[in-house]
Length: 123
Length: 240
Image (cartoon, rainbow over all chains, first blue to last red):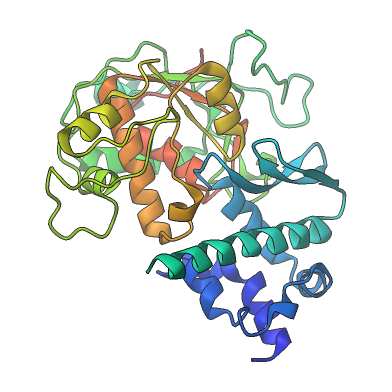
């Protein structure tokens, strides 16, 4: 699968999630990232998000809708964007929404891939 | 008020003026400072929808309000997210109190306890990993169900956006909805909401007070759906 298509699918994960009936892990597994791991880079995600900034809201929504005690988050705060890991993880304060979102997407997708990987090991 | 006189007590609403976005008194955060949360606003159209929807369900329990309902229509131009009229605007913390008997049979509650894969749940094979922000021993069956239903005994449940609601709940020692990330990421959007809804049902059934961690609920977010759901089941939203 071409890199660009994988990047597009990754960036559209929350949009596909809320409009469909698949889990996030399932969507990540179907994105083609396993055969194209190079697609998961801040630079390529950033390029796509810069041209499709409407997707940033979807990622903000995915993050705020989480009901977990531990995991990455992406939020607006005092005019900036914050990407962090709860509890006690790194916190990035970034002014540009596209860059902040790209940083979040990379981290979140990696977390999903790890969940998928562990799930496969157990099945 | 003639417009609301015919409504059941639990759904009666008083509309009050509140500061607009941009005015001096708007957005003053009083969360965590011990001062009084003051206002909640919802678009009039959404509120109407909620009330209409409420009229269509049979309330199986009696809700007793401790707080007056404070609500105000909000024009979409002043909506903080500029995302249409469906935004709530809230100063925190606002508490909502409900005294009720449990809504006893909800499919979502069953899903909440059993996870979403059992077609024939049995009392002995509950595997619901969802808890209330407290460590739950690996109980099974009825014991686990009753532990989940009991909450952590604080009598307070925090709702809001991630991660703020978790942070606030841990500060307060309150109940909060919590699914392991491994499970959350493997649920569909509908399953996530069903579990969330069942959690709210159990909190209402316990008679918990609700505290909200965030000033705004974005249209379409789970947080907004939580607020609408509370109204739908007859829990009055009010300022502390």
